[in-house]
Length: 194
Image (cartoon, rainbow, N blue to C red; front, side):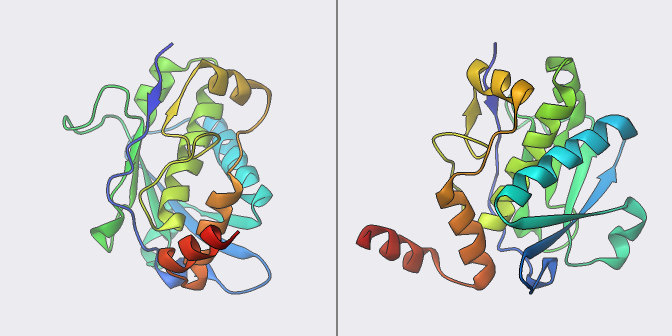
């Protein structure tokens, strides 16, 4: 089975309005569909992505497409039917977080559906969580395992069938630190002191 390559492109420092203060970190994500996506598949994928973030203490608030124009600070995720030619054939999604406005994440749902028939909602949900994770971390990096792994393999896909992949503790700390405005240098220094 092919490994999945998820390209994050340059990574966004998310707008502070996308996350609201409170006991839990709340992130608004607006989903735009360039082409129709099954509401059943999308609902399952969103539930999986939301549950993955909930484990990390982050609440994802999914906004309907009609609210995209009224939520300027929301992370915008667009479901596309193809990838630009500059991306490899295994790329399922990419982020353009420095765009400042407009779509920050592009997901090629056709490529996922064609390559993962039985796991379509599960893979789509993990891809969405992975790309949103890049935006929330604010840096271009991958983990050795879990949701933020650069290349998922057969073991990871088998795991998706049984349960969700998780964010590593470092991923969770990066997302929270970025939200709190801490620099990566401070986080690195803190980790080196452990």
